[in-house]
Image (cartoon, rainbow over all chains, first blue to last red):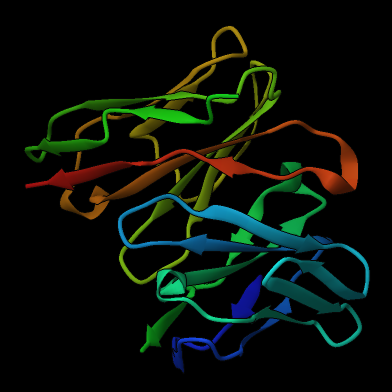
Length: 111
Length: 115
């Protein structure tokens, strides 16, 4: 089976840094993706990692360790609009590159 | 690039009725995916098309569900004899298969409520 774990909820302060962790146990790993989803809206793509290491895109960075089955999403200079659910998803090489998602981490940014 | 669109955005139906949803992918994207998402959960894979061929179906997709992509462009998802358990957000995503860089882009979803 496929298993992806991430914390259910996190709270952070505006302007701070927050790290959202994701651990996974899947077959046929072909990349790890992070999506942001505001309530009632579609997931929007943030970043992906295929190789080990850190990928940086503006205020967002994502890290991957394939040997440990571990990733994190780092959000810097938090803004109120960053309050959303953050979804960790593993792409499987088999099955047409489908994504297997975690349940999501609800991030609440407080002032 | 106008993004992935879905229609309708909301659908309320009575148990036992049939419903059909439409997805228009980003133009020239050859892959199209359907996912279902319930409250507090991440999206779950339902089915996948490469061009017009349906190549994968999840076990979640019972006999009451059928999907088509007749000309390799838009796709439809039909649910027959709807049940209350079918209430969910139905998400469509598209991508252009290009190896490691392939990224799925999601539409706004169709929220289904079965009474």
